[in-house]
Amino acid sequence: MVLSIVPPDRALSVAQGFAAAYADATTSPLFVDCNAVAPETAREISDVITAAGIRFVDAGIIGGPPREGSDAPHVYACGPMSPSSNG
Image (tube, rainbow, N blue to C red; front, side):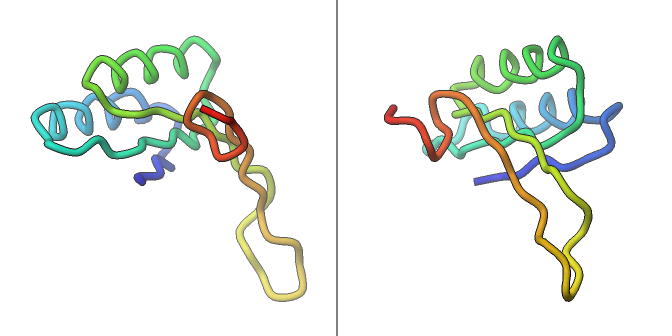
């Protein structure tokens, strides 16, 4: 599993680079896009990743960095490969 957590303006180019690097891999990693991007960009990222035969999950991180005495951030995921799905 690879978590993509980058500045929003780099999310698509990171996904493109990852897809290119793993296009010929014999196993399919799970690419989890955790970036705060527009829905259109998330769809573009999904298209790039899945076209390379890589499994994709769209996710969001809610909350600040972990700190002692405070709640940990929460990760919400969706898509056919998300942990809460049956597929």
